[in-house]
View 1 (tube, rainbow, N blue to C red):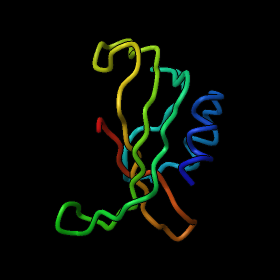
View 2: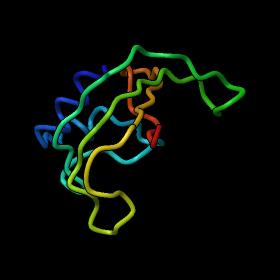
View 3: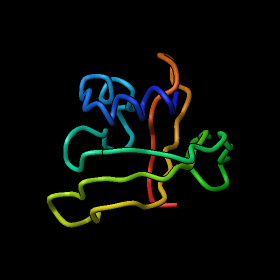
View 4: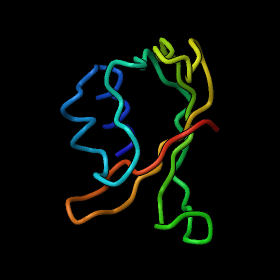
Length: 99
């Protein structure tokens, strides 16, 4: 799922990134900031209910972005992670963040 989501974000496929995001989760990647590239995609790891309200599968990677227009995300390369939950319609992006 992470590979599909990252490819959609890099290609600015906003419809697909929105479709793959949980309705009660985080924002979906589109164009602000723009994901320019990603490398070092790791293996999924579980995050249990002790750390989150719902069980998640997360993937770490390194990304390069344009930075966000509001200044909350810098231009350039940084570590990031995407966390997915299993919903009725399949795996969906629920949370994301640095590290």
